Length: 422
Image (cartoon, rainbow, N blue to C red; front, side):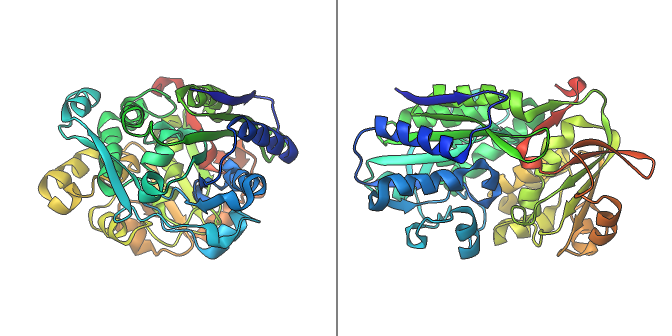
């Protein structure tokens, strides 16, 4: 097992050329490759620099880069405009679409007793290791799994084996892993590199992916004090050490402890990145451990026009709503359709306040009725943008008309918590 690059610190700010050089040096260590597949995230991880690194892979390998498979999981496939924006310079004809319902192969299965152990006895099902057939049968001699390590609501810290087994995974694997995380407890998982969901994915990778030539390319991205973003770390390798090094730095870069529980938080969702409550509820996941009891979370969402990224999941959200853990578990037990869509059930749990704080959504393209019918509060976007102008607010605490407001410009880049909830 090899670690080809492990560079970075909390103060590092890699330039584009430095990233190119480090990436090329690492690829050279791999030796000659003739058929390469790149597996980057989609636009929901635009700030990961995965688009840039995929372009560098194309520059390095040329026509030996045979395909690009965005690891969209259950997300809506990327459109031509999104691809052109995120993967500037990479030929459009290289891109493939992952269908999590039909394009997968099951490579093996972890036994129910292992899942039962990891869930502390709460669940009793096996877990299938599923990947897109392009990965398992494509005949590539290099698979570059590109992504960003950042605190994550389902798996503690994003990317690494998640990019393959969830990002290009199948219905059962995605659903059962997400439900495991929800039942175990999101707040026991977020920001932790080692947890039950990660244990399942890493165990499956060790058992069922070792024959595949996967190399992980992981970035750590953080905010600059003066504004903007910086690539703080680049880690490239083919085993868990690569991920653990990146996760260690990400905790230092992306995890923010607040001194007092937040009474009012305002989160802005960049319209180029967030189009649904399914993805936009990162605003809930990432701030919930910092919010005081009775707090209000205001979500400014100029690009959000749907609830679920998938039509079936959208229908589930509309039917069952964000009602909290007890109501969702009851619905799973009583409704076979939701029991068959455990990923959706997990999301309904993750994105509920459990009645502890108020969530006010301000979407540009969803109605008051749509938002309130799923259990959230609604407010007019233009009115709230006038009151809480993202262009005028700085990250962290602000005074707005005499009230203290904590502003988050992009919830996908961090995790916030008060010590009382750790």
